[in-house]
Length: 134
Picture (cartoon, rainbow, N blue to C red):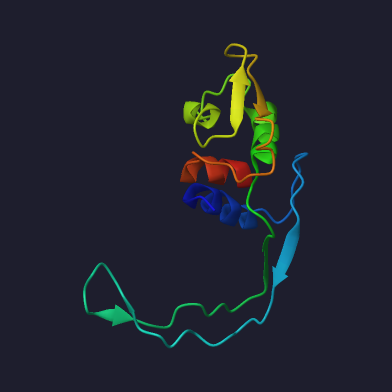
């Protein structure tokens, strides 16, 4: 799973419900008030560590799967006809990418690359993930 796909997938949890056509399968993460991790975690190569991560005081929902190329392409078709916010990264169309763009600004259209529709989207920034979630 790509780091940026994880970011986008995790940011989807920010949306309690979706008004767009993109379909997200949600799962509930329960066990509110679970105990924090007791393992000491070192940071940045140092020997000083911290503990207490992992405790969550509330029940929440998160997407069951990473955001796919097909889902992100659908989002782009809804929100990025001109793409003034640069939600599409040209690297998405080659190499490990999975989405192509055609047309000109104001009439861009996006398609998931055949065979990569259900793969996690790559080249999504934190800002892009927040925009997707909103």
